[in-house]
Image (cartoon, rainbow, N blue to C red; front, side):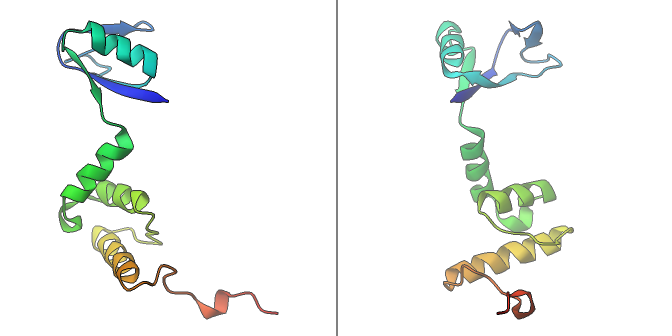
Length: 123
């Protein structure tokens, strides 16, 4: 298991790289061991905080925003997290249409989506 932490104040040096506000490496340290992350947070006097798991944070962010207001990267993340196949959708309107279609199919109990009869295996 791993954790992510955000450095709110000061800098932390890890493996020769400086992390912190205003540093080129940024203020977030990803994929630290649980032990290392817990130690940094405990010893920081509140200047380093543990971040929620990226997957959980992405789900919360995606759920809080209507798909019509998401950008293409957010739509891709939303689709991935909700196991929606975007197919050949390239543009934002195509992605939104694919997501809405998939959500309608699930709401109606059709979790298989549309099946092309020409692609089925014959005897």
